Image 1 (cartoon, rainbow, N blue to C red):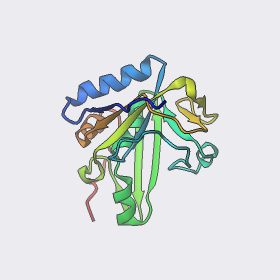
Image 2: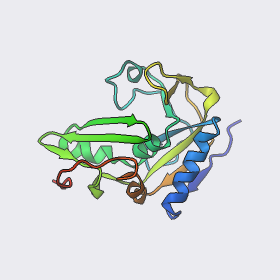
Image 3: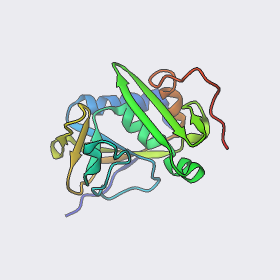
Length: 181
């Protein structure tokens, strides 16, 4: 028996309330989050390679989830497909430094900054049961599951949430803002 999918549309909800909800969910310890820039509701998440397969954990077929709501939200909102279509490839560095996160996006011939509004779009954050995952040996916030998994709920989030991330959680480098090519 397949449970009915649950979609919660948070695109018109105040950004701070969305942030508080995501933090509360992972704060219970019972849930993990998976951010995706897809616009369609998924019945289940299928194992695949991580977007960043430079680490050993990213080179295995798995469903990836995180206990870091900032990272999940970032993955939901970053319009990777657009960036790859424009530049052919992009580099991404996402790291935590205590309560702060550092992001660096690069494309051939150009640095992209998180305050460039065109790099963000609507996306989905899937809520997953932590008990279905094992910790990644390379990260204290990344978890993996080697089988398909059905989300408990899926939340549609707005690119307006990037304004909550930028400056507060993702420091912006002291360079001119990224320009759309």
